[in-house]
Length: 89
Image (tube, rainbow, N blue to C red; front, side):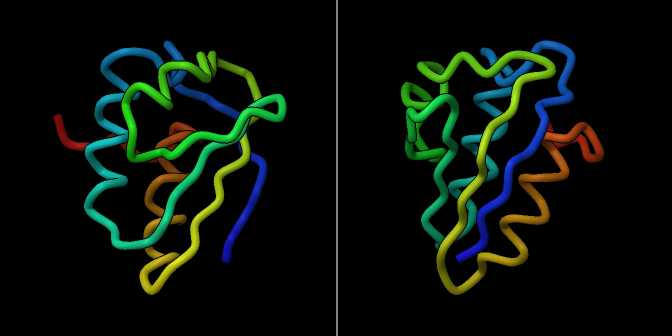
């Protein structure tokens, strides 16, 4: 299991389109993926769950990934949250 706190550096945070893109990418991996903010933990493969976090720009979230492809999934999704990588539209 890989777990780390990350700062959301996306301009609009994980809202609407960025959240949908994040969920789409997360579902590509077989690992269990969760995001947590202020004690609320949600399945990162659920658009509704992700939207309820309302993670805005500059806020801190914890990304947890557990499974057979956890390293690849964590690196890919963490880079997106931190604004280091754009996901395909």
